[in-house]
Every structure is written in structure tokens, then in C-alpha cells.
Image 1: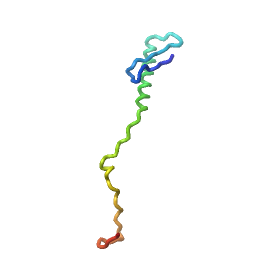
Image 2: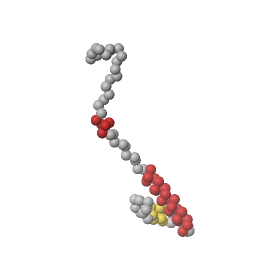
Image 3: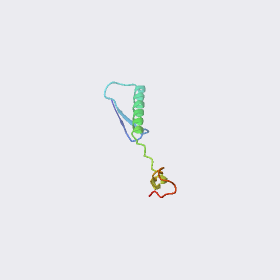
Image 4: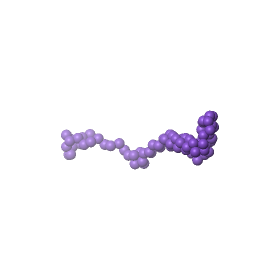
Length: 79
């Protein structure tokens, strides 16, 4: 038996080819349900989350200044 999704979404019809045996309608419904659920989960997990864009503040922020040096007094220029 092979199951092929007829479309891209989980709401699309699924075609099932029976190669051997004679499954009951309940067995076919169970197989289609399991395959559809697995396909839906795989499709949902395959989508990558978009990376968050930096805010305007982060983009425009200047680099931090150097920390104050305690060995230079407040009254002198340390340049």
C-alpha cells in the first residue's frame, strides 16, 4: 500500500493504492488518519522560525565608550 498526498496541505485528498489484501474501511480510515497526522507534523516541523530583526535602537546605537579609569583624577584630562 502506498499513500500519496494529492496536494500541499493536510486538507487535500489522499490517494491510497492497495497492493495486497482487502482492508476494511475502518482500517483504511485509520491508515489515512495516521499518515495525514504524520505528514502534518512533519510539514509543521520543517518550517524554520524567522530570525528576529534587530530593533531600530540596536541598529542605530553607538558603540559603548571605554570605562572610566580610576587612576586618572576628575580634574585632569586623560586623553
